Image 1 (cartoon, rainbow, N blue to C red):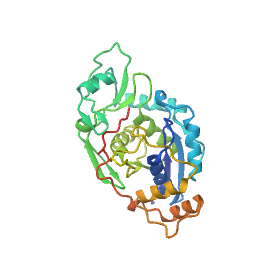
Image 2 (cartoon, rainbow, N blue to C red):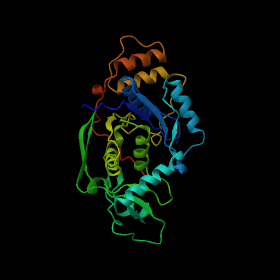
Image 3 (cartoon, helix red, strand yellow):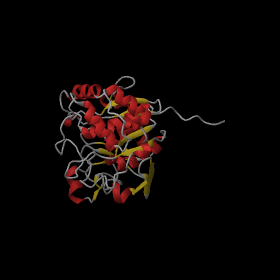
Image 4 (cartoon, helix red, strand yellow):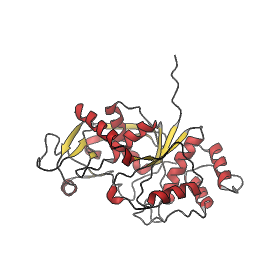
Length: 306
């Protein structure tokens, strides 16, 4: 009997640390079109776990922006802050199978001695055999498998890094109790039934960790596609840290067309007259095969993921 592939499910997961900017639009448009072009579902998730960085009113502003740019999502909005029990259960599962360990190292201590990798300081496994400072409140880390990790990306092809030398054991839960990005997003994607993760290429290294977590927890494997980044004129990744301006909800169509071009998609023969007309064209003509791979997604520096 031939197995039927699960229906396509995608998602967009902004953090409410400020309004959406053009870089956010590129990621949203790519993931949205990839889902809608095949009649798939597209979920909206709000990544609101890192409470010290949250901006009051940002969630409402993000929703207004998405609606102004013609995005619609399936089901209710998924807030990460509502699902701590899921992360706790996953951490317990990792503890039981020996894939998680406690760590007493502070960020300052790690930064002072660690080599730099594509996701920031490479944790050297200081506490793998027991906490150096057992009286401290512990964090929890994932013990990555030895050797190289590899995933296949639909834009970049096969991608691999050496776990210990280029990534280091990632955080599962910080010492202050905040859940780590990798664990939360892996559990959330499984809970939403996400089959395809389409996002910016700065998160390509994170895919190796999230794929390892899927394996350790017995979760379905995702398909991955990492899109080109919007950059400043100086070549830096467009972000809040580089002064990206909020999307102008009064003029959505020019920004949508610019994002469409950055994603390498075919130019409409006639300029769309409305947001609805643009999205109808985009659904009918989207091709992930046209999306260019960034030559060096990390040319402007390193992303920082807790």
